[in-house]
Image 1: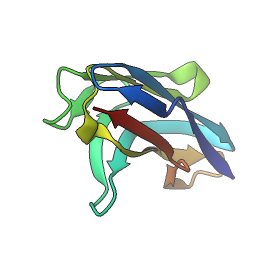
Image 2: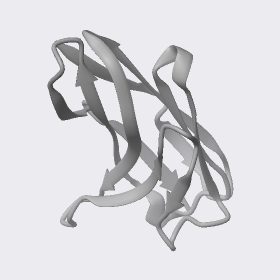
Image 3: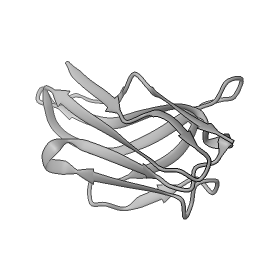
Image 4: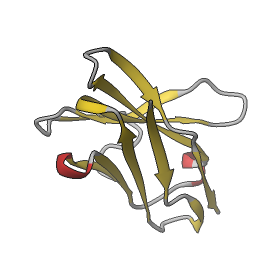
Length: 120
């Protein structure tokens, strides 16, 4: 059993910052890529940022230069620093991770989501 628990969402004014965290726990042998997705009302879930186990990152064009993802492999935790937030960043943010369990099974795990609301 593996769980991803997110924290750090909330309400912020446009131009402000938030930092999301996502910690993985459970029967984990290793974690490959970790990522952040978001889903706004009436829209499809979209990739925001991802990071490999060796720290290579990838960002959606809409957040490049404003968002930064990082990870602490020792803590099985991924972060998303969001700066210069815009109202269009309002969404539920989900983290995911490709996990290899102690039994050798690989699968994608998802967090429960955290709401980010940016007011204008």
